[in-house]
Image (cartoon, rainbow, N blue to C red; front, side, top):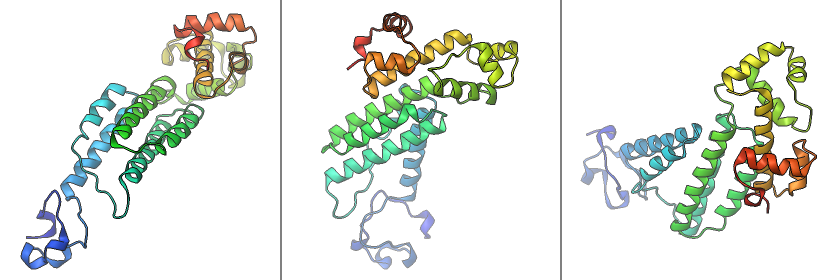
Length: 256
């Protein structure tokens, strides 16, 4: 028998000698349980499946992947309490989800406060039940960010346009100004937007402004007036009407 053919779920090597196990001495690991190679490979495959779902902004698929983790054992560490372990796992997952959302071309603005809020939340959990609830919420929120704000799959031209719009919402964002900024013809830019974003510039900018304002209200604790001004809308009444028409909900659902 060689090392690669040896498979087990858990082996306490302190209870075995190489001779009694019938294994080469180099296969023996000291003094604590270890996962088999197959279990490690399976666990990593499940993690990749979960992260892939987040990368595509697919909350339903991420929940299915999460269900696959039930029954998967992740070993603790000697001297660590259960509270420490559940907090560590939540922090680790939060970091992985943020990085996966970044890989999906989500701007850091949409991730930073969310990430920091979950860092604080992870530091407050004490039970596996609380950990599970937090994990579900994190998956849903990160998938939502990817679904709403990812620029993956767009051409370089449109990706640059989108990033510029996101960072200059206070400015006058017209077809003429953007075409001049990026040395494009108005007709070419309009055509690319219709092909890739499936919208004209005016509607896309409006949608972006309102989504950005909703993010400010919900996660960055802006007032309604502050959020409206931050996205270049000075008339609060007009902002209120535009918000309801675009989001489908009133500001009371977002403002704190």
